[in-house]
Image 1 (cartoon, rainbow, N blue to C red):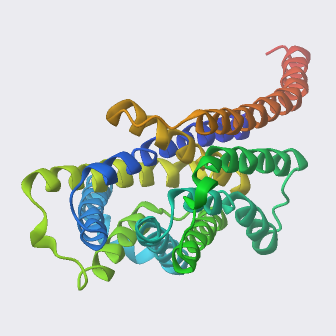
Image 2 (image 1 turned 180 degrees about the vertical axis):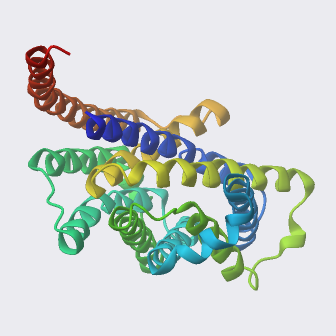
Length: 310
């Protein structure tokens, strides 16, 4: 029963992380800084926020938590830093359509990496759900490919592919060492993104209004999402965590539509509905299987208590 409850909590936490991350497109569209400056300030605010949260949790033991995260924490930090930086750089070099479609490959990558590194087999229903979600993502962005609007650069597409691969690898690190506290690794990831962008960035070009948005971008959108995701991904299979995270691509255009009046169009709405249906169907099947397994166990426990008179 505890295992089923843990998986349910993990799904909710990863879904909440995807909702938090989905606001990134809206904030990126609103802030007035160049991509490198955005990466710099976003990473700096995120690192400060996560370091503060870690210090509140651990107190004087904070340095020890960073020291104990080991190679696994360092690997996850590098992966998240790579994904975060390459995401913004990809949007600056290729179409949003290309980025979304290529990112939808992440669940497949996570499933293969989880199987290769951990022997964690991916259920047939999960492969089916990932395939349907990929189809929905392709429909969402299909309108961008008409009339050559979806053309992008090879370097931008390669960056988007790197985002998907780095994100999938980070999930595997989380699952392999679930006992390691990964929040310090997330703080390190944000610090690495800021450090990597320090030279090409122009921090002084950010005005007070931009800084407020960038603080929200770093602490709220990225930092809070990291907290939720690192807590949830350790509780569920890697392919399932990556599949649920696809929710970010569905909700992102919706927030832009509601806040800026930019209609995503019928293909985006239809594709998003297909992705949501794939996620809901997969979750419903999993919940049904967990209940069918838990019911005999509960009945056996009840009979055992009755026989012992307790």
